[in-house]
Length: 235
Ligand SMILES: NC(=O)c1ccc[n+]([C@@H]2O[C@H](COP(=O)([O-])OP(=O)(O)OC[C@H]3O[C@@H](n4cnc5c(N)ncnc54)[C@H](OP(=O)(O)O)[C@@H]3O)[C@@H](O)[C@H]2O)c1
Image 1 (cartoon, rainbow, N blue to C red):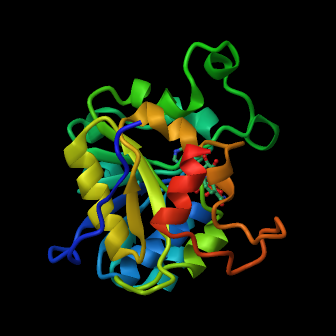
Image 2: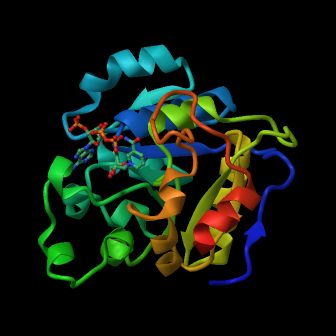
Image 3: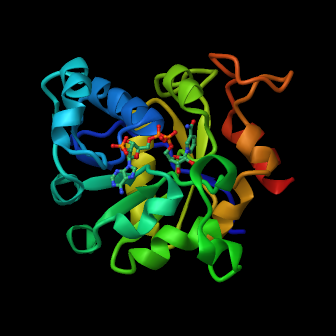
């Protein structure tokens, strides 16, 4: 694992358009944080933009809905946050050359199994990058429960600010995601190449970083600093 490095820096000056492929628990939570931070969001799901109108209305004028291809094309950064079994439906061409945030976890009991993961051909944490060969995939937001994500954001420098781990093969893409994360109220903790995201995959101590000490998912959860996270990632 490369030397841990926190990438929290000055607040983002240029606001970003963030595309969402998937607008469920994590997608809509991130969209809310993004809109509140002054970013524009373009949401999509599997059923069509018209089914997202209530969410768009709740999010306000910085939000609109599109198809997955439209959201992929519109985003400066694009978040893929769907059940992992649907990964092959993520459009490749409009994401070529872009930074793509991958929140996907493998939970076959709840979300259905993926044959290539079951066959040990491709580990779950690398699956989206193998599909999006032309994109710079950064794993992020995959180890935090969506209600904790909504509740634990803090301004830069707050003593109880939490850190979120990120991993991806392109350093520039990791930096872009770290800058976005900073604007959403979290420090980014860079664990290096995408393969290192196994350190915060399901079943690892880092997956429970923000869960209350008694092990419940009660809201608001528990803040975890970069130092806390470093210990969990090394465990
Ligand atoms: N829930 C959490 O706290 C949490 C935390 C960390 C990571 N994750 C991971 O993040 C991902 C999303 O989780 P979630 O809880 O947000 O799921 P969710 O609430 O079930 O939402 C899934 C979203 O993906 C959309 N979708 C499904 N197939 C699609 C496709 N082919 N193209 C475009 N959109 C599609 C769904 O749209 P329709 O409703 O129209 O099908 C829905 O908007 C999962 O991989 C999960 O493992 C979840």
